[in-house]
Image: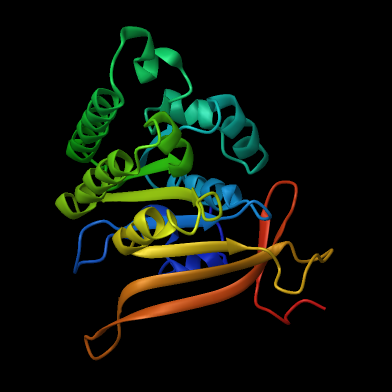
Length: 266
């Protein structure tokens, strides 16, 4: 059997276990990761990285992917460059891709309300989680949502409906130890008045917050931005819980992303 792929600084910040299994600590159920980005620096590469780790050939884990942003072909093309064939993973029942861009998926062609759509959508996710974790040899399932801001558009601007939906999805991570939730949201699409109502509640729900930001000193040829990973509830040797924050830079390449500490690149 081939060796497992080497871990990156991002993987190490997520307890050093990769996206699919990092959350199965004995003390709690699954965990929720919130990825926050901005117009200047997209956090899509973090979602791609976590998706690939979830579908590692060294595990039998399953992913439910809700896309409000792009069709399946978009992710398939990007992940193929990274060495992961999403079409094969979907055929092997390890990837359940819900294309929310499809008219019939949202139920708009049948006169359904936004609330009806999201209730039915959560029912699909809940059923997928229960079936997956009841399957012999399957220990973990990850729900990925790309992205929350576009979900709010489909909810006709109702942040309360989006928060209710995400709260229900988050409750699955508490109910099932083998379930995790990953969401992408854009930090700068909200006004100052709206931000406390949505983003702060998402940050409260999340166990891990990954902020993707521009390089602090401006544009650079060898550094594309910086990551801040805030990992809540890390238990130290004395049994106490504390927050741990990791900061590092990144450089996006054609088929991968390089992560490194500030000052380590010359």
